[in-house]
Image (cartoon, rainbow, N blue to C red; front, side, top):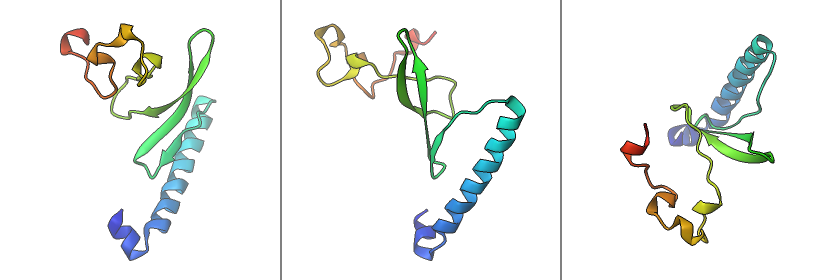
Length: 102
């Protein structure tokens, strides 16, 4: 990316990525009959809105293209988390112990 910025070719590259993405989305939408708006940031990060829970709540999530899992951070993972969530597992960026993954 830096080389392309310095060479002045980044804008053209982004334009090509957008054209390719729209073509792919058009084919997918015609094939499936539905579509989902996904915001892509230079093909490095993908963000979408999802709705979960009852009552329904909408969250903006970063899509992990290398995993089938989706993580949604709830109120217990905020800086002012309640004392019930003092376990370091509730801290953002911590890892779930392997024995809890199965």
